[in-house]
Length: 438
Ligand code: LLP
Image (cartoon, rainbow, N blue to C red; front, side, top):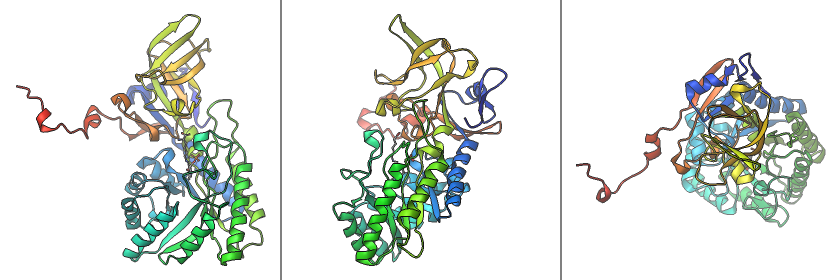
């Protein structure tokens, strides 16, 4: 997909760049991001929303892949930005992301994080708890600032997804529950706090979702809640945020819908369920992460040792693994791969791709069809743009890979490969343990 193809040398080419040349120039493992495809995904959301006629904001959920170049690109595409920590906020601000388009999430924002966001005058806080309401009011009043907020509510919708990603049920660490009345109570409290300006509510029902009915049901629940608030408290929400969670294709088992299908379904549900409630339909915000960057990313590895256990399995080890992609180990996530330097060769055998970490669970792919791989071959794993670099670790003191943006035959480094100095940068040896070289 995107601008990848097999070139006349039989090599995988992404964004007009031959992957074997990318390996020579940048080394492996290497994250490659197809810039045009990221831009296309941003535009698909924005154009589909324009078609609904609703007022909207599309906030890129930066947790999926948060580096300065990505924030700058999202800003250029007219996106808003969802951040969930001071680290993501700092990255966005360093990249010059317009503060008024930043939304700050999280179930346990610390006072320091809130102050950083107040200093920057970000556009909106998504308040997650009663404690946060009062903390934000106190800190904003000290500075004589007015802050926009949404209240995160749990609509009780369970999307079909991996258990760890389900966040819309009642039993959740996130938000105020609608069903048991805490959400209504939070609205009342927020209205009474004079430094907070309540814009509306937020809900997020899960991730990697392949159906529209979860979003439609969330819109319906939130609309019913909005009606209740209007009737009981004479208060109107101006903004409804329906979160992220739009699925992408990792393997043929995945059956995502088109971005426009998700957006149009949301638009219709909003029009149906909010009709007649307010003078004007509320502004709709969403927060896609995976669907913006997921399928734009490819990870390149070099094949190293190969262990063949006849009649059992062939383990093909690569120079990365759970440190650059923890998703298979964490969620049993499945990926597809190909040999990027022999992209035209027919698949001849089923092998399993192992990482280089010292634990048996470090397997990237169980059973993938490949041309008989040799040591030195270049393996490309697809759809690694989301929750790979952003969840990477230094386990086994492995250095994080570089990230390059490819576009129109040009490759630009956006994150340099970590060095050994980076690995020990924060280490401190107490004086009594310093080794005397003499
Ligand atoms: N908004 C909120 C409030 C969220 O919690 C999330 C994701 C998103 C938006 C973006 O969801 P997306 O469009 O990317 O599905 N590490 C897991 C995914 C965790 C998602 C957490 N929240 C993974 O690798 O699959």
